[in-house]
Image (cartoon, rainbow, N blue to C red; front, side, top):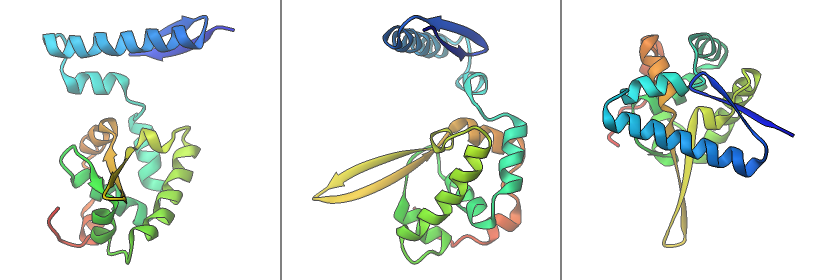
Length: 166
């Protein structure tokens, strides 16, 4: 059974999952080389590979609740790096990081309705320090660009956030 996938607007086909993985990894390496050599900017590459079309972005931001919008605003305010869930919860004015689960669940429902997954929105990293589990979230750069293109989030979303240092 052939495995088909699209990369930067081109459709590729492989005979086995291993071949598909090898081909995908090779294409990613070629993309990284193109950026390094200046053939394409990192931003142009993100636009070519992101799942975040303007329609998807608008559909998501118009159909999620205020808590989800504020969650996304906190992630957008971070400089391209991971944020701890503790920081996010405090910025949202939540009593604990556990309260964040409901917000993330509501967002995941809306993402699924758009044919997306939470991985298309943010990456979760877990670290263990002295036996303590810490979770960090990093926003997808395609979503960040879509938000910039749409001058999002609006002021009313930002106003509900708690001021604090990272």
